[in-house]
Image 1 (tube, rainbow, N blue to C red):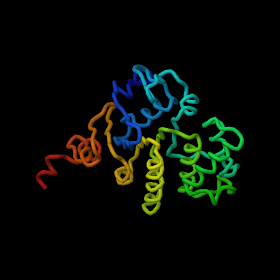
Image 2: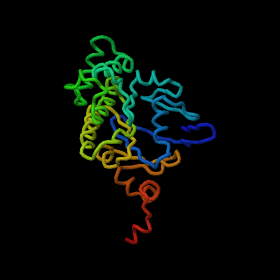
Image 3: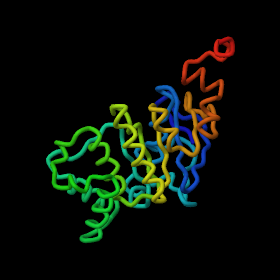
Image 4: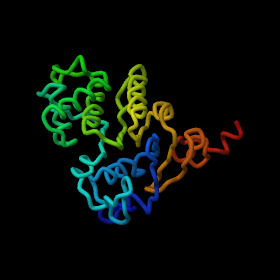
Length: 237
């Protein structure tokens, strides 16, 4: 698929596949097209060319709301909760309007999401009063309340302290263990490598390298483009 904004090409004939149950980590320099890729996958942006299939169905022209109801959820870097509502109410909104649940079924989905993300004890707390890590947890809880099969994570470790990152990694691992497929864009590479079963590096809207995390991070092209390491200087050292 390709995506252009006017004459600017952000994704260029990108061809990729995500298997059910895997955790795909995506890295790349700023401006590589990573967030645009997630936006096209979620339906927030429409691909300029190409097709997108989900569970065998062509969803290229499906709107974001339809994709959310049919198993694609997103969690963003900057949490934007309904600050004046409780944590439970925030998650219930997602279970109802994102997941299409009603009544007790929606409430059960919300409670399950809160338990998985470790926010059950904060259910009645105003979302606006949460610390950053718990706001990140709430973003994931809202996504999980929609009962997704595919969870798209956009730099959710951004802004966290080194001490907080392992807690977030543990949460993502729990989501993966629960059978949800994960595609995670992240600049905190050690967080990504702790979970990812496969990694991809993008640059200029194209796939530069793909493989296991170790293979991608050891690729000379990735070292030069993303890590800023000159392979010749590394060999000399």
